[in-house]
Image (cartoon, rainbow, N blue to C red):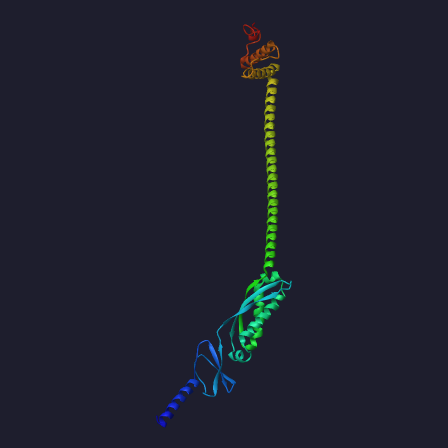
Length: 321
């Protein structure tokens, strides 16, 4: 091979190396830094970029996508001296690649250590019950603290999540016993309240029933009183009518009225099927005389014979035998 050919090959290799050093293709989601003699000069954005070969070099390759950082599990002591195991997740994104590359060394390690120390600080100010039930509060506090602390690094912390807050096994058993006792207490209280409400309802029902019964008895008594009043009025009217009739017809009409009542009462007594023996408490002649006077009064009312007429033939029907 001649010297000319060797020179051409060397020049070709030098051109290839120069092109490889001067032409850079940046993938999407990354930003590279350019250093000139070790000093930061500019950033290379995704796509095709050109730099000065042998003078400019690629410094740091920064990922500008959102990154998920796992926080290792650690033991944390709460304010009431309870030990809990805690771990979590931090979501962050590099907003200023130059600051993230040159303001902090080992960005991932720095974020992890910062998150762990702040978790201990936040949970250490809370009781165990507040820690177990206040994850949202812990997340908000950690997010605010980490976002403010990482701002000089050109990093934006978008979200912090506590994944596990686990107390020791003996504490879990004690909490389960306490929860069981609390549920039993609530069940007992609810049962007592239910029994009390049922007793009140029963008492109210009995009271209303007594009130309704009293009202019913009162209404029945009022209806009975009204019926008796109407019966008394009817009897008073009947007595008045008899009195008026007696005033017009004399003593004979009154005797007729009494004899009529007596006969009806005697018929009712004799017609009773359970009565096998009828005892007449007065003389039969008196009853016969009253009936005879009643008949004479009726004849007088219909058109009595003139004075001196003969009495009824055969005399009183009760006088026979």
